[in-house]
Image 1 (cartoon, one colour):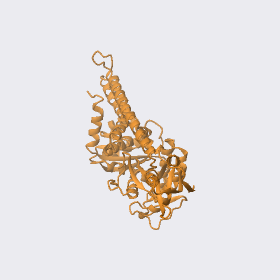
Image 2 (tube, rainbow, N blue to C red):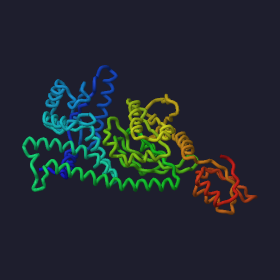
Image 3 (cartoon, rainbow, N blue to C red):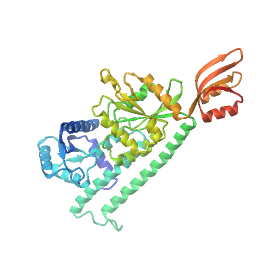
Image 4 (cartoon, rainbow, N blue to C red):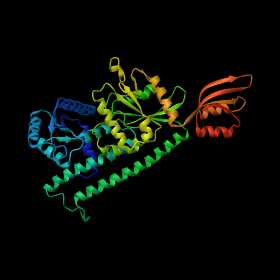
Length: 445
């Protein structure tokens, strides 16, 4: 008899063993060539998802047109019969990947009975990719939380099978609970424990953000569609050799922070975020709300786009849609810098859109202009001031400014024992400076 504690392990073993899969992409109403091209690109992405998993490969694939996207059964009778025949004629299949956001428990059970192999949807495949790439405790907890709906779905199917055998409604011992009630209660308890642990980590993350704000390090969140080159860009901007970009979907799952310098020598913190994906289930996004919360508390967003990708327009729409659903503040959306990456893959690329920057993170082209744009937006968004301060070199004024502000330039007047210091400084720090050192002469604004 399976227990809830067995469910994650059973599912994990199924996923880890590797699968020779048949990939089916469902497209609603393929009526013209453009729709067919879009379906083929979505199929390519689905194959890419499967190939990301160790020991998984696509044996065969098919694009199926359906007119029933909102119904419980996504295939009509004729399509389902032809698909079943196709799968039966393909040797060596151990799993079928139906490239839809979520399969209902009813559909999943029906497909597995008809095809005789395990069936996976987009939710379960992406979830396993997340699991393979998770490194921190927080990411692993968020994956466990995202796994709960999948376990509930599997539980419904298992209980339906037991009910057919007359075992699902039996009472266990003297508890007065049926087997399915025990399973559901254990799942609920598991979910509550995970949410409690995540809340503790959320509070810790909030404290770390507060400490960064106190030190007045501007925070720049680098985001975009998965595999657009975010990590490569941050490595180029910061020189952090510890970053190892991978040409793989969802290579970055744990949010990491990396320090870099702008032309003015101001230090900023670049946040490497999880990549977005089309048809990413809302429950999966919600499970990572603690991680994605960092984006809301940024001083600036940099949207990286793989400009060489044939689906670049739809990818942008998807990213902006996710940001809208996350209720990102208007100030961040309006100041967001859009970066067209991977121009090294396109001959003589020219940005067709205004207010965008063309770069190659891999070849480190265009990074100077990007740093300048980031600096301009940071100075504006953080309400920092660029000031010329006359300081007395016999006092700690200059060392204080080096510690608490960004010193851009120092012009020393040896005869007077003073210097004119060009600084970028926050209003709070400047107010403190005036309290500590009385009577400075200020030029600029």
